Image (cartoon, rainbow, N blue to C red; front, top):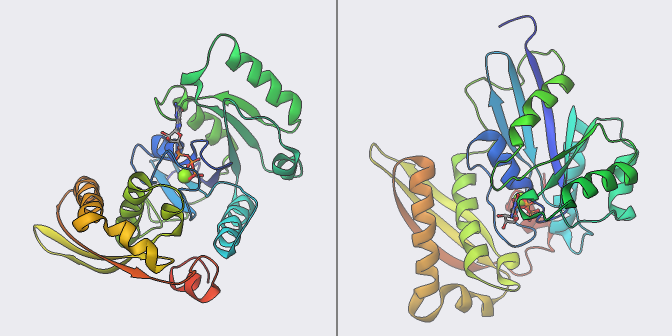
Length: 294
Ligand SMILES: Nc1nc2c(ncn2[C@@H]2O[C@H](COP(=O)(O)OP(=O)(O)OP(=O)(O)O)[C@@H](O)[C@H]2O)c(=O)[nH]1
Ligand SMILES: [Mg+2]
């Protein structure tokens, strides 16, 4: 390892739905984080470790910053807070149409960590909108290290971020083994892929009331056999998840299996069950069981 090897932590933060997970996946060149059109998709801090001969950057995708309404939200916001404490650089993501909201952005004015504000979704911009918004954010947040317009969806301009980040990351030995690309387990990714399909296939409260637990993950030479339990908050939601003659659950299972086969590069056998965990989002004990609390 060279004496100038750099290693550090970069936190991706911002409001729900602005494109944090899309950006993380583009920076990693890998679909680590699930992405859906609905807000509050990401519930954990997920590390993506980018390794090279010269550096190791540990990106953290985080849940969207919101005003907590129940214990699950408290846990999500504590993941954001911890990731900001560790960071050598912060990627603060805003969407093109976002405006400065004091209650959300004031906390960033107090930070000493360099902040790159990413103006995302520039593929949707018209006329001078990008230039106007770059100016707007520089005026409203006076401690920004830089403002960079990007499109996390198309990848446009995302490549300018790496050199900028390397300037901010210290000379340091790697924090993780250099063949690792995440802090998360295969079981976690399996459960996230199922959760993504639930976010995509159901409306209103259903996605938010759902949690997925992997009860068995058995890898053989040519196949991985996975059993999952989909938890809902109330008995009435069970029927919605299952659907007429089991059709909705079957669709979720098929969609998830296809993505898992591409993620794990192996044939997948997936079995799903639906259970009720009363009010799990509000109960500390259940949040602990689901891995949201220590
Ligand atoms: N047009 C456009 N859409 C984008 C872009 N980046 C993200 N999106 C879309 O915005 C939605 C939210 O994207 P995510 O990456 O899940 O956003 P997030 O900030 O991680 O959301 P949470 O996890 O809920 O906080 C999805 O429908 C994305 O496809 C972009 O650059 N352009
Ligand atoms: Mg996300």
